[in-house]
Length: 407
Ligand SMILES: Cc1cc2nc3c(=O)[nH]c(=O)nc-3n(C[C@H](O)[C@H](O)[C@H](O)COP(=O)(O)OP(=O)(O)OC[C@H]3O[C@@H](n4cnc5c(N)ncnc54)[C@H](O)[C@@H]3O)c2cc1C
Picture (cartoon, rainbow, N blue to C red):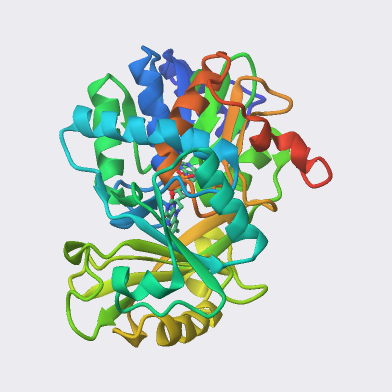
């Protein structure tokens, strides 16, 4: 005979049943297997924490922010706190390469061009010098000798961060997830989290199971606010679609990694415009990746309905002016998303109401290179430890007038 409790709905009865079935309590549950969640889960498992990593899509997937073959790694930042974090991040990437036995970083250097007397470029130069980051400052007259096939705009200065390079992104994500599993970590992909119940033990419900954890890390990329709604919090995050453009070299190899062409950033190409960046041709032979560092707003599940190409128009003008060896029409356009905060700095913090819920969000299109150090910092927060870097620039409190309780 089937015993059925009365006065509970079908749904909550099933939830209780699933919960009863799983008596297991994890030390930590991490939601989102992008680079930040995967690195966090790995750090936790390495620290002997029983860890579950939940991902809504079957892995690997190309619907968040961490897919694609390459990302830029650099120390070129205006802010001291990012430079300090990058010192350690480089070390942790090298450690990951050793642990995984795969190449994840290729040194290419990074050319930065920007208004010589502009505030941003001057601050960048000063920070590079203050931190003694190996940098070559290029004089205008020697520019074309060092960097052929690039036109430096009038009034622009140029420098090269010599240790910057390319991270092999897809490969890195796979490597971190494999290392996590080899430490006993559990990945459940194709399981979308549909509810979170805060408490001393956090209860996380997916579309096929219910799990409990002593702490929870939310690293859900563009879906951060969708999940945070279950905890009564909304952050001022804007999700934008990025058109990832590849441009054909007129003469194959002109801008290739094999010819030692560097990555580049052009700061503020025009007043009011965002940076433009590029990576040498590598993943698709004969095609160089050149993108605009901003896009048009979208809902994360509706990414492909956003068809604005204003960014591509800006890129066409830039390529025509600055990179004469490229055909000024994108040959391939792929899609990705940024989750942007008002100040473009990350959110790395505990939930303001529930101390055992940790949030990593708002990586604003520049978070990949920090993956291993962010993983370490979020895992320290989840384990109740004092984080090893100053997290004050990343606190939720800075949005006091924006962040709101949705309960
Ligand atoms: C085109 C492009 C170029 C970039 N270039 C650079 C660069 O050169 N250098 C650099 O440092 N950074 C770069 N970035 C930024 C960097 O890639 C991102 O900051 C980083 O990947 C963000 O990772 P994430 O883990 O926060 O998000 P994501 O990778 O989006 O991961 C979040 C995960 O959470 C999962 N999830 C969401 N909701 C749920 C749910 N309900 N249940 C279960 N799972 C869920 C999602 O499916 C997703 O897999 C670039 C980004 C883009 C888009």
